[in-house]
Image (cartoon, rainbow, N blue to C red):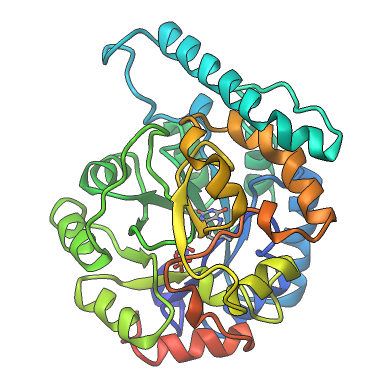
Length: 360
Ligand SMILES: Cc1cc2nc3c(=O)[nH]c(=O)nc-3n(C[C@H](O)[C@H](O)[C@H](O)COP(=O)(O)O)c2cc1C
């Protein structure tokens, strides 16, 4: 089974759903001695299968595939014993989604489109994607947003696949260890993209990454992968000093030639039109960090904690914004240190960061 000792660079290329993660990017990271990742989220199973084949054609090295653990399959979903019953909670949430739909109507009218129906139970093709990663014998599978069911972890292990779970605090880290994680990705508050809390409503921990790593190390006896705001050797060295065995970087790879991030996304990271990042539920209903653009300014205060429903609602709006090359309507996910993202080959990013840290 995969171990961090198989890497010559203790650097993991973050899975980045929505375009940035390409087979070329995953392979470039793996070929530089790190671990590249593919993002399964929002991909059709057949496209994910093609991504895996293409990655295998570009590298002989190990790589990872990342899946979102949607609420319907999340073994860490809140117990019905806490607070109002699940039916009352879902009714409140459905009402909040409808209020948000009404708030977004002018945006939809501007594009002349109707907002779609939403489905809180959607799993984004969980069964088909799992079958794929099992059948294709992917060396590493990582999960975001929760804990996969016990039989899934057991089956991955039976096939020799290493399992990475993501945690944002000690409780999630302890749960990940108890559910069979081989490696633990500890994601701090500066991370670009979604914060991987195991519950959608949770207010995420705001301790900085070294503090989080130190706290998690007390409760979880697993190799820790540090993620969030690492773009240079200084932050990488700090994460290792706090107990990380590897680092995971997303934003630092967004402007590489291998990145599939939209040109508007790449340009807006560099041209200063959006001077800061912020954390918002406006696009997906889950908290995520991105460049603070017009869409966030207009809708952040109105967006409910409802994933995947809000993601489903805004999908056609984001597609129209993309077609119009309108960065102001796109989810420009980026970590707080986005200004450091350079236009350099992904292998160089990996080597530059690895030079700052000891080998795994
Ligand atoms: C554009 C983008 C998309 C992301 N998509 C995913 C994803 O699909 N799955 C996942 O586990 N993490 C995702 N993340 C979060 C990364 O795994 C990681 O936690 C984050 O990039 C680390 O912070 P950094 O961006 O400052 O390096 C994404 C991050 C970005 C920037």
